[in-house]
Image (cartoon, rainbow, N blue to C red; front, side, top):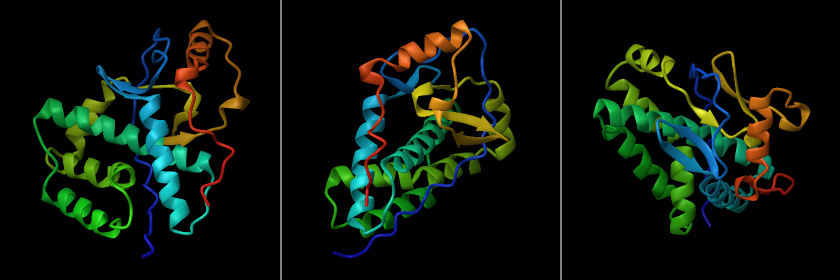
Length: 200
């Protein structure tokens, strides 16, 4: 089997704003913006396929590390997809070229695994392609007015304008808003991929 290098998706520097009074996404929702959502089931499925791909390349990574990468990539892609929809733009030829090149490297993998790797590994290219058509300033101004809901079960926060993963077990919900979010996250349908397993 040919060896495939799975590149870690760069964490995007996105200045996401938070809206007060929002108890968080409903159970089963991983990420949401303006009615567009990514389900926890989809995150789990993509992370599972991506983890298998990592293992088959001979690399070693924990399932938690892979899940963190997947959630970051899907969050970035979701935001860019919403922006593209509003502005009426599509990814340019550069994105399609990168996807085709990536798929050529993945010829030994089944379709589901290829799709997962492209969704995660192509997220940065997708975002860059969309933003390049309108300019970074226009995108940033739009994003400053948006609210991106992230299921707290994933421990994804914003620090210094970047997506950052933290150990959610170290935080304690004290406000009613936080408690509601934690309760929603505890729903079985919102459970993330098993983090103790290794991909390698």
